[in-house]
Every structure is written in C-alpha cells, then in structure tokens.
Amino acid sequence: MAKPLELKLKVGDPAPAFSAVTQNGDTVSLADLKGRQVVLYFYPKDDTPGCTKEACGFRDGWKAFEQAGVVVLGVSTDPVKSHAKFAEKFKLPFPLLADEDKRIVTAYGVWGRKPSWGGSTRARTG
Image 1 (spheres, rainbow, N blue to C red):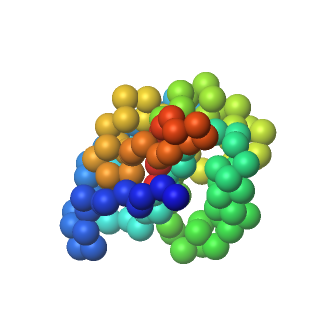
Image 2 (image 1 turned 90 degrees about the vertical axis):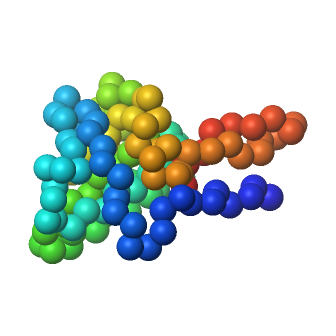
C-alpha cells in the first residue's frame, strides 16, 4: 500500500502563489482570484478512469459552484493540448491548468512517487 504524502501545507497556511496556462491558452494566477473562493483540485493524468470521474463530478456539480461564486480549477502536469482534448471530450466548464514544470504540484506538496506493479514507481498527485 502506498504511503500517504506528507503535506507541507497546514490548515491556515497561505496558499502558494501560482500562474499557469489553461486549456484555452489563458493565463490564470492565484493573485487574480484574490478575495474569491477557489477549489483547486489536483489529478495525475487527463482522460484516465479515476481522473475522469473526479473531473465529471465537478462538472456535474458546476451549477452549485457557479451559483456560490466559487472558482474551480483542475491542475495536472499534462500539457495544454492534452487538457484541451480532455475538457472538450467531457464538456468540462472550468479551467484545467497545465503544470508541466511541476511548480504548482510541488508548492502544494501533492507531487510524489507511488509504488507500481513490479516494484517500480510512478508519478502521483494527491
């Protein structure tokens, strides 16, 4: 069984600043969202079973987030082009941030390695 990640952030810590490009080519930064409620969710890979289920859950609850004025942002290390295909395929109404250099996932303490079949390791977030 994979050992849980030890998060560096604690409740009440300020959120690390970030800026990243979305699937539409727009740049989003946390500073631009100051004063707004933000759900920042991390996932390992576009268009995989668990990640798709998670993204579609946010999509299916979108109206409630929108009515509450909450900004939803998905973050993975996949490139913009992959995010664009994923968002279009599943009609995701919120931005997906491309974190190819792993700055955001590292700053939030959600990037690590987990055991895989045969004793090797693979990337994980969350």
